[in-house]
Image (cartoon, rainbow, N blue to C red):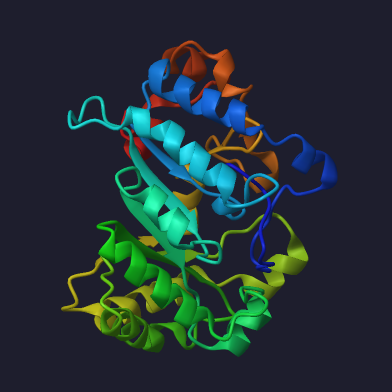
Length: 295
């Protein structure tokens, strides 16, 4: 999570974006140093850049994001054992021609979030970029550009009470719009809204396990035969797989029985000489970590 800054205000999202937390964000040079440490000392070979909105780092976005990609380029290799695979999560708002060009040869996968085709629903969620005529139109344009650049596209959708009734019926129209613009969607991940221990937010967004399971069945039926790989991520998997490297360099994770408010924090990851030291000093279950993060 390279920044907590975001240009959207999605009501289901929790960001540590109080002023003192924003000030704690690593500088570009420290971000570069952290990536180098993850690669060289902790042997990371896969990394996701997310936020907030990942492209919003620095005072004049997306310049610093492009500079970070240029730094990561040195860790790309034709040898799979040496290659750093890179995925980027974005809402697409700042994904201009310069960004797409900078991603070429560095970024393997771009994941773009789309929760509805209905702008009123998106506005209600808070996922509506100011000045944008249509959120879907912008997503389609971005996907078309990235596809032309040879980058694999993944879609993300958060399933909450705001969109669960209509989303399954919108999946095919979303794909059709992408295909009409010569874009290709390789995979689609659906997230069950996860509680952040904020009762008012939970009351607005929580869907039951039964309702989510029913949605998953509808989504599978809607996308059958499209060739799109599907991943349905429920609350249990969300908690078990949590390992967020935060914008100030430490990592957030959970052990069995934790909730969002009791989740743990490591020190700055640059303070650990190896993954074994990271696991030992923080009582992280290596088997559980490996299940989701491929040691």
